[in-house]
Length: 559
Image (tube, rainbow, N blue to C red; front, side, top):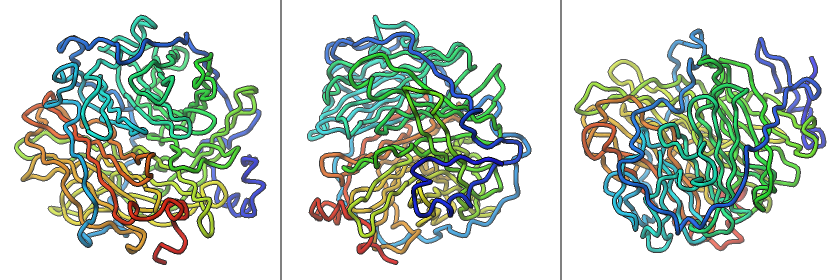
């Protein structure tokens, strides 16, 4: 059996150790440079938009959308993937010490209650898929199917609510059909000081619509792109990440409504930053036992080393208690050199994927999307630490407890040395009681503090937005006690769809301030959803000088 490693892997001292961890799941062939199918997708067109600040706000009812299953594989994992419930050995069954953070603004986001320069927000899509990113001076929030720009200092909206399709209006009608659009993601490309916004469409053909800001001003003009996937079947559930050589995507692939496996794609970032023609390359994993793959998003002031591949993480087949790590190397000049390396099997503590969660006041259960890693898979390069290291932080939802004590918790990980010798530095499942926690998002600040936001539901209280966190001196694998961001006041009695991601992002201005975006309900029914934008800091990070933050790890962490 032939295995191919990335050139940086082979050059590393621990390359042989990593080779020993590589495996091929039965029924799959190992990645082979000559045999792996790389799909090159050329844009339908590219162009530039007028400044966002000049765009009109859509009528309140124009883009109303019914409940959809936008992020779900048509068939999901194979039926044989069902396994017996496992005991979670890293469950944190106690709350931990009081969470000490410095709360900042707690803002009404898009949804019920939001009012901006364009007026009150219409509920454009269900589920909302709330997502936000923070830049040097602004915050951008996206949901299905709208966006808003807020001033980071005051918290006041400066543009929106705006139908997200307005970005591509008069450019390409494929990207302006509100009835079939879904899965928005916004990221701030910190290395380039640009905004990247992705929107997908449903049905066949499937289009991926991209917008990259011309400057760091989110209310300015955007370079626009449209990509068609007609030959490859229906794609759903796209996630996105920034990297030095590309904007990386992951997606589910359905062909004739049959799920065939996840796919990794990458867009030519260098061309998009200057508004020129840009191709996309994709590699398909034909494995119905896998889904929910997410690319790594570079964060912090230090970029990945030159030539580093992007890291894709996903849960292994059910019952394997493993994460799978893929390394994606792209060559936009010679696509034949593009390669998805792996998988690397990373053994983790036993877990059972969660099912659905109950709500107060209704028998309707909510879907947890537990077979997918949650965004972001956050990458940081602590090049100045002693010793230097690279790290990935991510999370997913797992089942906890048994019988009447059954609940769900957020499993989170910090993985070290993803390129040379991937290792679980720490892991834990935050589930201090039998309540239901799901739809989380985790991120690390420049000092190594980790924050985790999520939804919480119980049989006696409506779904709400909460968070927890840890500092480097806390025992490994543990979080501090949770705190409430906002209490919901209603249940979703008409749908099991609760969106597919929330977002935790770190302010690039100080590499300390966290912003979490999550959802809740203000009344009965899915069309009463609302979101919150919550700002906070860990005191140690804010007080530490910048040079100390860049050396996080080593001496500051507890063994």
